[in-house]
Image 1 (cartoon, helix red, strand yellow):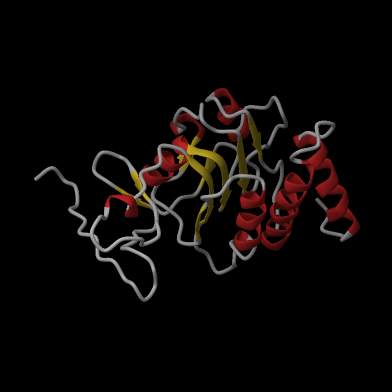
Image 2 (cartoon, helix red, strand yellow; image 1 turned 30 degrees about the vertical axis):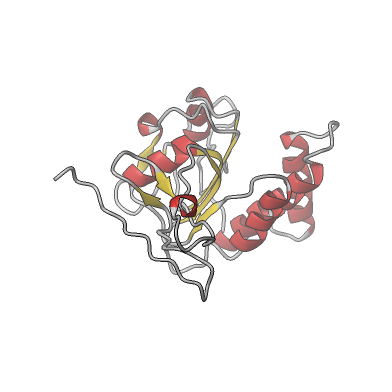
Length: 220
């Protein structure tokens, strides 16, 4: 009657896992995440309800593989303390994406883009539709033209910072899909490498990755 779901836990001793609903959301807007089976009699510790998501790596379906680097990137993030990343190659609806973005410290979207929008599984996410991003440390739009006009331009990246994200990165022009995958992958490799180096910042990471890509003739 409330429009929610009733979840009945079923544990499995053979896998040491309980019922898992990837990217699940309850009727009151709480995430459901996988937790390990530990006890036959008390199931309270088999469900976790985080209010903040460490990182969300989201690719939207297309003919090309936009998520090939996600496992390595999730590992890089886990190594510096972002231990519960959500990864999906199936995309999300606009409603679900806005919820996940509002709860995530780090967000990476691999999709189609323009100066003011990125594509979701139904309606586009527009800069005017962005939710508050006060919890967000970093957003990367792995999509064409999302930073068109530059750092102070009227674009999705600027709007993202105005909504509270500490840092937002996009592409000023059209970017080929495997070049974008490679850029994002190397970005997080260097993000991990520089994370505890007080002399480095995100601009250093971005500069280093761009230099490597030019050496490999990606032409970004």
